[in-house]
Image (cartoon, rainbow, N blue to C red; front, side, top):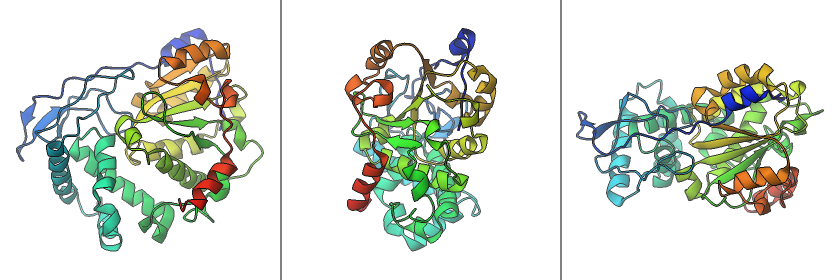
Amino acid sequence: MKLKFSTSNNRKRMSAQVTPLAPVEGGTANGNGSPALPTPSNDGSGDIPSSKKHVCSRFLKKRPPDLYGQRHAIESAKCVNDSLRLLEKEIRKLPYEKRAGVDRASMICPEMIESREHRLLFLRCEQFNVDLAAIRMAKYWNRRIELFGDAAFHPLSIATIRDRGERELSLGFLRVMPDTDGTGRCNVFIDPTVLEGHGYEDENMVRAAWYALHAAIEDESTQMKGVVFLVYLRHACVRHFDRSLVKAIANSIKGVLPVRVSVIHIFHPPYLFEVLFEVVSLLLGERLTKRMKMYSGEDSAIHDKLTDFGILPSRLPVELGGALDLDQDQWIAERESEGN
């Protein structure tokens, strides 16, 4: 993957535009007695107002927008239980061909797909918009089966991708950082230059990305609040931009994986990023593009800005002047030893 970056005008154009959400209380009741509320579309970014009405529990309430402009459901027992009930109904409403993966998983691994924990992943990602959660869950299982075959019906682990993605995972294109930041979100570090000189298959890179992002959302707080991406491009240039890989991974995040994107922090964009920005924005989609924030200059100045987002220098990678040395091989070994 290679990215190039731009002029001051483009930096202004590309900086994240955090849009507050409309209130969720109220709304017009739909046919099943649940309020139909104006809510975001299911592309992974969340929190962008939409005029479309979606199915929500009548007990759903949300907190005010946070520093990223995102709102989070208040997960009362009534709201969660009612949303889970509605989710099953919405899944059954989907055409058979769209829910084929869900149906197959229900027969082979009901203990996984029917678990409260699994279904909450999709409800949280879609801010408890039940119809969107059902659609995402159906797409997820169709794609999961395509990627992993029979292994899809077991928890994703290093063993799952042993022959189809472990080498790509070891390259460290996506590195999951330990713990969460000050806002309760998992941070994922991306450095496209690590792919330099290494052959890889796009599909295996997608499998590796799925594994890494599943590791990121093991934390319940991250499920609720979202993932923060830190994209390091100090040494990146056009040859590092792999359009097909970016598209494949972006398509997994948009409407498929139960990953809510809070922000994409981009550091030290090359001066020609304007050349590729239109391509990047098309691949990511409008809403994810609006969640991009650009940084350049001295590390100390960047640290000051990130501190406002609960990301302290002590938990930044060494590439960004921080204290963390993200050893991908060690991370893989530790997870494998734990059976993950």
